[in-house]
Image (tube, rainbow over the protein chains, first blue to last red):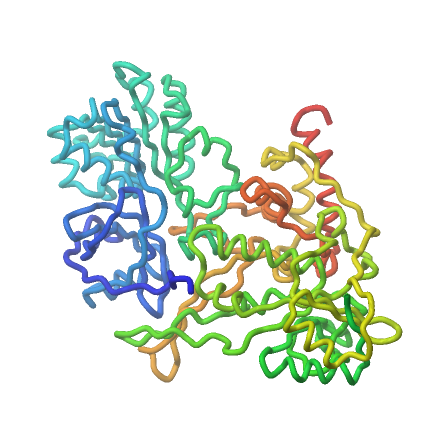
Length: 264
Length: 338
């Protein structure tokens, strides 16, 4: 008899960090293997499930950064004081950080795209010798939309961080401009020993990968992560299929040499 | 080797089989169609042979026996979840060759693509198949070109002929049961369709590049995205999750999965209002390529079995076999030598 993979188990909410009015990070108790870039099906019975990527990995905890944009996430925001959420997972391949070992790694993240790569950034923040250099370019709509403000302050001490906003709302302490504007001028010591990760909304990913290719990155050194609303996480429901790939099984992290041919 | 059975003989056989099996076969539901005065042929439980519709193609396939339209995964209370019981009896399903090939496609997704699905496998393990001999293709069939006209590996075969009902089984236990109720032993191999009125050719070198062809724009307006093709298709396997809770007690409810359609609005919705393939023609292209291109790229054979039910059921008279036959020119167009 095959194991039932659709049943979830309760997980205790350890801590909630409020970034913006509609974006909170929920830290949940979790024991088990998990990689940055993987996702879980997070649910509240009665309201349904939603696939949410892991935005942080701690000892016996995992973080989910959730934006209040739908039926399930609305319910999560309204009911989280209930102190627990339903979980099943992890699903997907996640980022293989060992691939970036010894390389100059450029991470380009747009908006909530910071969530799946936060674990990658943390890994190299904690193991500064593992990568030759980290360059993080993160963009948000406005200063009010910036997630993980405290982390950015901390990361800036050790990593090369470019934090930019589409519109700084007149606050000159924040840079203004799209993430793509910071790609052509990237100083890379040796393109043969570099890699790039791009995560964000579809248009941002399209233009960022284009800019990276123009900057001299080869397709095989660029990694992207795709977002779809998977209902199952195990290759059955069909919602995440792109050509012959299932985002839940073969992704969400894809090498650009594969992902460049994706047509939805 | 096979057996000929009289009507009363086969009914006795079916009665005996029904002790161990729920018997499913295509049945005619008079006036049961969406349109007034039109019958619907779909799968249902049978107890006698006259209930099996052998002269016409069923509008819907057997797949709901393995993939119910709506399936409760578990019931929940505030603290607990409980799984529902599965069907206790085994199922014996009468189906034609095309549908028997469709079982392999369902198995591919539900048992082999990623981890096996517990709800599917517990129904599938208790499912046996009786092939319905198919002497002549219907007007929209194209099984021969999809390579699904001949089937092997079934548990028993059945065919209605002028002088009675013919059956055989490669399995001793079933063969003995058939023999017990038969009139005489005789040579019997089920009929297979050798030629279909509709011919299709899936072009060599077909790829997702065909998405840029102009033909899909025609379906932006012709297709109304109703999804009937998906629900009639024996190989469409997609579903969506749904939580419901009971009006009398809001703390208790259930999580279900319901069959979903890649043609219908909402299928690709992601958080925050995004969605992919907003044009109906792009959905048509996505479905078409899954059936005759990318499924094969992943699993080595085409998903489409050529049953033609999608053609039969489309309210806009869109022909899927015609779409397949347009792909060659569409590829030439995108390759720039059209």
